[in-house]
Amino acid sequence: MFSGMSWRGSVACGGTLAIAFVVGAGMARPQTPQTAQAVPSATPAPPVGTDGKPLAFDVISIREDKSEPNPQNPTYNGPTPDGYRLKDLPLFAVIQLAFLPSDESMSFRPDRIIGVPAWAFYTSSVRYDIDAKVSEANLPQWKDLVQRPAMLRAMLQAMLADRFKLAVHRETKEMPIYQLALGRKAPKIKPSEATTLADVRQKHPDAVTLRGGTIVTTGPNPGQQNVFGITVPDLGTFLSNLAGRPVQDATGLTGKYDVTYQIELAPPPQQGAGTAVPADYFSSQIFSIVHDQLGLQLKSAKGSVESLVIDHIERPSEN
Image 1 (cartoon, helix red, strand yellow):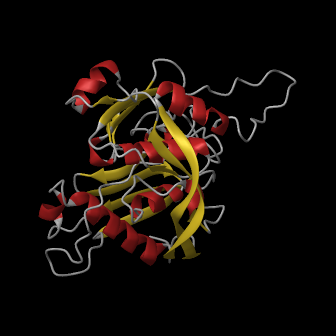
Image 2 (image 1 turned 90 degrees about the horizontal axis):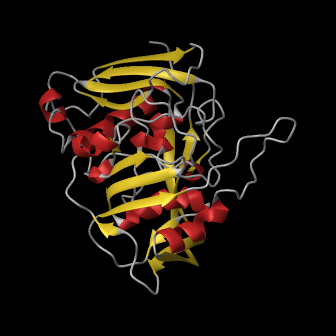
């Protein structure tokens, strides 16, 4: 399941990667490049609930969080046993969770959601707390963890349309991509071992579970990413934000893998020196990470890339 997301202390997303998109509830976001946020599974959303009505939350509370930002405060974006909760995050976190790409990859990259106003984007200081409850009639469906992800997306889309007047459409364009391909030698990713979140958390307390059962952790070295039980197409999604362009799987590898790689983080700013990180600081590392650490290769190509386009959005109506 999608566990949570923290946007605090974010690095600019143009060319950034890692598990920052999916930091679990109550954990401060690591200062690592940003990955594609984790979304629920791609099971088709049921058109109606058990009561015969279109899927929607029964009760919704939306409030702007005006408390002082504190990296130690818990943030969360995801389902609860009886509904949904967003804590102290920009609206962009909700939009990413509500809409899944048609190819069932883990999420839309931030630059593939077009037309987001500044107040709703992930770098915004405008943050929201949302508490929503599922109706008693739909609660039995909601408790089914197979149905819940699709139900959550349908209910979030209904909430965004009703309270934020959100209207969207999808576009597909041909654009530069990288193909993730096999190298001359055997890849350095290993078939996944059957591991539970509880097992991983014995060594990595910050571990969280993403769509499809992928488990991600940080450390122990700064910039180190550990990914357990990931498919190669989803690995491409992780690498795409670091690469600065979409990375699509062309390896032919099936199954799930355990992967570890190291990102060189930007050095801390020196007193009296400029603080800007070069635009290609993270993307310049992508070839060495893929070739040297993963034993794979990237090939420049062109491919069809889907975007989510926001046609209209407003600040939320009052409770």
